[in-house]
Image 1: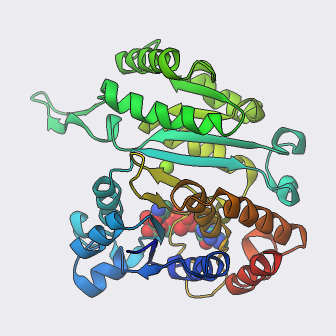
Image 2 (image 1 turned 90 degrees about the vertical axis):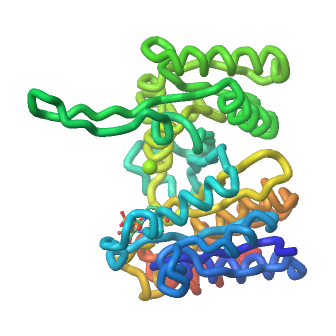
Length: 350
Ligand code: NAI
Ligand code: MG
C-alpha cells in the first residue's frame, strides 16, 4: 500500500513536488511514495485528466499530495477533459468535504505583508471551508432566455444537517488541538441556509463540544475582522462560497502565494488531499525557481492529519522557519534561490 501518492500535475507542480519527495524521504525513510500523472499531464498521456487507476490509487493511499494543474495549452480542451475537471473529480471521488486553509505569518516574513507588522506578527488561524456542497453544487442551476428579452440565471444554495455537522465537527476537533475557539460564519440574518447552519453548529457544540469556545459571526463582518484584527481568530468554519472568498483574503494577509498550503479532509480514516493553493504558474514553469515551501508545508499538514506524525510535522515547520531565518529566499520572496536550493535549505535545517 502507498503511504503518500504524489500527483505532480502541470507547470511548476513537478518542480515543487520534487522537493516534497526529498523532504519526505529525509523525514521518514521508510515511507512508500508513489507517483501518477494528473491534470493536463495525464490528459496528454492518457487522454483524461484523472484516470480510474489514479483515483483508485488515491483512495487507497494514506495521503495524496497534488502539485498544481492547468495552463494556457489546455484552454481549448473540452470542459470535462480540462485539468480542473480532474481536480474536481479527485476531490469528489475522495469525498474530501473539509478544506483547511491556514493563514500563517512566518516571523522572518512579517514585514512582507501589506498590513502593519503588529497586525500580522504571530498570526496563526485556520479557515475550514465546506468544499463539496452549497451554491457551487446546488440545483436547480441554469440560464434561460426570457420571453421579453434578456436572460435569467439561477444558482441554488443547499445545505443539509449532516453536511453542516460533519464540517463543523472537523472545526471543533481542530480547535481542541489549538487555542480552543471556533468562529462560525454565515448570513443567518438573510439566508435560510445560514439559519440552519447556525442552528446545527450551535446544537453540535452543545451536545459534544461545550468545552470549546464558540462564536457566531456574519460573513460580511468576518471579512472586515479578517483584515482589521485577524489574530482574534483561531478556527473559522464556513460554507463553500463564503469560505472560498474569506480563505483567499486570509491567506493573502501574510504575503506570497508560494508559501501557502492547504488540506482537504474527508471522514476520519479516509485519505486527505494536500495541495499548495497556488496554480501551475506558467510564467515561471520550467525555470526551476518556483517556491517549493507551499508544497512542503502541504506535506507538513499531511504528516499532521493523515500520516499520524504530528511530531515530524512540528519539526518540519520549525525547519522551514529556520531556513527563512537564515535568509533562504526564492525570487517570489525577493531572493535568488532555485527550488532545489530552497529544498536544500529546508533539508539542512532538518
Ligand atoms: P498561479 O498561482 O499559477 O500564479 C499566480 C502568480 O503567482 C504567478 O505570477 C506565479 O508565477 C506566482 N506563483 C504561484 N506559485 C508560485 C510559487 N510556488 N513560487 C513562486 N511564484 C509563484 O495562478 P494563475 O496564473 O492565475 O493560474 C495559472 C494556471 O494555474 C491556470 O491554468 C489556473 O487555472 C491554474 N490554477 C490551478 C490551481 C490548482 O491547481 N489548484 C489553483 C489556481 C490556479
Ligand atoms: Mg478561490
